[in-house]
Amino acid sequence: MKINTLLYTIRRGFANLFHNKWYSLVSVATIAACLFLLGLFYCIVVNIQNTVLKAEEGVAVTVFFEEGTSEAEEEKIGQDIAARIEVSKVEFHSADEAWAEFGPAYFGEDYQEGFPENPLEGMENYSVYLSDVSMQDALVTWLESIPEVRKVNYSAVTATTLSSINQLIAYMSVGMIAVLLGVSVFLISNTVSVGIQMRKEEIEIMKYIGATDFMVRSPFVLECMIIGLIGAAIPLGINYLIYDYIMNNLAGSFTSVISFLKLVSIDEIFRILTPVSLGIGVGIGFLGSITTVGKHLRV
Amino acid sequence: MSRKDVIARQREEFIEDEGVIFLDNVSKSYTSGSPALDGVTLHIDRGEFVFIVGDSGSGKSTLIKLLLRELTATSGAVYVMGQNLARIRHRQIPKFRRNLGVVFQDFRLLKDRNVYENVAFAQRVIETPMSEIRRNVPLILSDVGLAGKYKSKTTSLSGGEQQRVALARALINNPSILLADEPTGNLDPKNSWEIMNLLEDINARGTTVVVVTHSKEIVNAMKKRVVTMRKGVIISDEEEGSYIDDED
Image 1 (cartoon, rainbow over the protein chains, first blue to last red):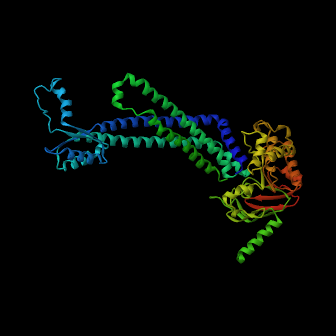
Image 2 (cartoon, rainbow over the protein chains, first blue to last red; image 1 turned 180 degrees about the vertical axis):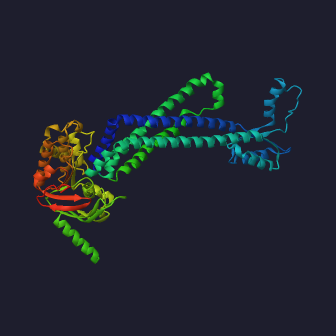
Image 3 (cartoon, chains in turn green, purple; image 1 turned 90 degrees about the vertical axis):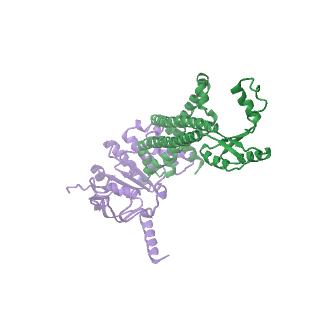
């Protein structure tokens, strides 16, 4: 294709946008509304999931040792635990550290009086944090099989509940995003179809004159891709402003809620949401126009 | 090459040498009803001016659509400029259509563009350099009497002027054949005659002109070849013919 033809195609794409300004506005509004809802839902789901994940990360399994286990053996066991894939973090607490932590809580500042020796002697332990709480049972079974391990403390109910919540959110969010995406694709491609249907005659004229399918199609495709791009950029901007406002302003007013919620940073959210939204907008504009124009090219 | 291929090639060479349009026992049926064309054989030579006349449903529009390769024949063969249209693939159709100029009753102009852009578009599709387009468009607009209106929106023009724009667009690429489907159907008598005179001028310069029309007055006055169709068949084909009414 000659450069003149390419430039003409680009110019026509932009000219069509302005010439059919009402259609362009309606299309942009439809796409923007769909992608706004999609973006909003994504922000909510990601934050809920993050909150549950943070809660999961706080769930620890405590490992106590048999009497007479040497420090070297304890260290080796610590390394073996840390090497497991379901483990995110391992913390060693010596008996002295444990007494220094719990003593004041139970006996006040003078907790050492009346206890010439550390009453928690032999209670050194590992706190094992999981990256995936659903694998707690497997970890506990393995820990209990180690001869030097005397006792493993864990909460099966907490792990099961968090794991179930996480799964439920995952299923619900996949379902909701799929439905929203489906509705968006349907509405956007319908809008594109209606716009092209209105210009069926124009397409036919071009074909009678001897224009190739590419020449007929490309200005429409470009026009729809620009509409998709603008329609995706607007809700991205709005969602960004809303999210930024919540992060900066509401955090101060609802400190306890925000600390419980564990909000994901704005950069992290929009690092995924931006390419996905723009991709959907431009992609649907591209595919919708290609297929719809194609129906009218058999002239 | 097989003997069958040799015969076919010889036949195509003959058609190419002898005429620009050749319909060889062509029939066209749609899904229901009687055939729109039924065993039509028609030969049009280079430089001829031919009227195709007949009532609604006689098959005139189907004939034009077959020549434009908008439709393909159910049986028989349609040759245009030596090409068997049944053998043209979809992606080759644009190139084929660039040999033809087409004018319709409803003008079919691009409404969002001005006169210049409408005519220039036909050159853009064949990727003519911009400098040539700038030179050619004013010349052809001058030929059809619209030199001063190149900036006008097509919607602001009269019917006659719109048809002239359509003619200019059809002619700018120097087509070998001009197909005009009811070109005066939406025009008053004065404008109709102006358009017919333009078509005659174009024909005088060597372009084959095929006009589908209902206008008895024009057909009878111009004394050209007249092909009359009725119910999908050609009922008469006369040099310097006249319009045959249904009741005749």
